[in-house]
Image (cartoon, rainbow, N blue to C red):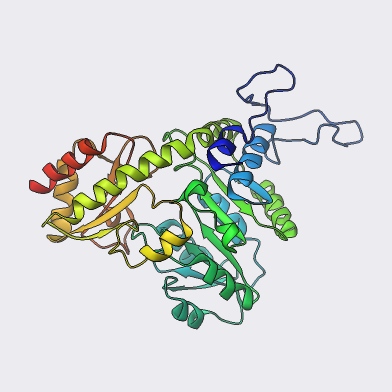
Length: 374
C-alpha cells in the first residue's frame, strides 16, 4: 500500500459500535475491570493506556515501518523515557547540531541518571567512530538537524552502532515518515515530535517513539516507564495527531514545494551569506539526503551577511512569516534560534530558521525579499 493511501486508512477503521467513519475520541480516565483486578477490556487507567492513543500508535507504526509505537505528551517526554531506560553508566553520542532541548537535558540531568554523553559531527563517519567508547549504548542522530539541516547517513550510522553493540535512534521530526523511514535504513528507534508536521495545525502537543523489529523488551520497558513517570499523552492530543496523519502526505508535498522555492530565492540574494537546505545541490549533504529521503522537507535556515542585527531586523520586517517557535503548521514561522536557546546558544547569531507553511510560494518569497531589502 502506498504512503498516501496508508496515511488515510491506518488507524481509521470505522467505529465498531456506531459505524462512525471518524475515529471516536475516548476521554475516560478509568476503565471497568473485574473484581479480581483482571482486565476484560485490556485497559485500567488513562495514564497506562487508552483506546484513542492505541489507534494513533498503530497508524504511526505502520507509516514508519515499525513494529510498535508509543505516544507521549511531548517529544521531550518520548526521548526522556528512552534515555531513562538505558543501563546505568551508558554513554550516548549526540550530534553537535542536536535540538537544544535534548542538549540541555543531557548536560543538566545525565549525571543524576548515571549517564554520560559526548557530541560529534555525525555527518562524518570517521569522526563518529572516533567518538564512540566501549560504554556507548546509543547513537542519537537527527537528520535533517535542527536548525542547521545537516544530513547524516542513517544506514552508515546503523552499521557503525550495531558493530559496537549500540542502538541507533533517529529523530525524524523534520522529515516525517512521508519523506524518510529510518527503520527501513537500519535504525532501531525513531523519535517524532508529533507537535510538528504530524499534528500539522499548531494545536496539539505530543511525541512518539517507534521501535523496529527485535526490540520488544526495550519497547515494553519504555511503555512501563511512560506509565510510572506519567509521560503519557492525553486522548484529545492523540485524536488530533491521528487526524493530522491523514493529510500528512498532501501537506508535506506542499511544504517541500514551497521550501525549495524559498531556498532558491534566498540563495540568490546578496544579503544572504549561507542557505541551509538539503534540496539545494550546493548543500554538503545533498547526495545523502537524495538517497535516503523522498523529498527535502519544509524547513529552511539561512544566515545573513550582516550578522545578528541584520537577522533580527529582517525577522522584524516580515509580514507573512510569524515570529514564533515550533514548526510544521500550516502557517509560515520565522525564529532567531540563538535568542531562544537560553544563556548558552549554539546556533549562529546570524541565523534565522524558517518553517515554510502552506501559503502560495510567490507570496512567501515576496515577503522575504521585502524584509531583506529593508
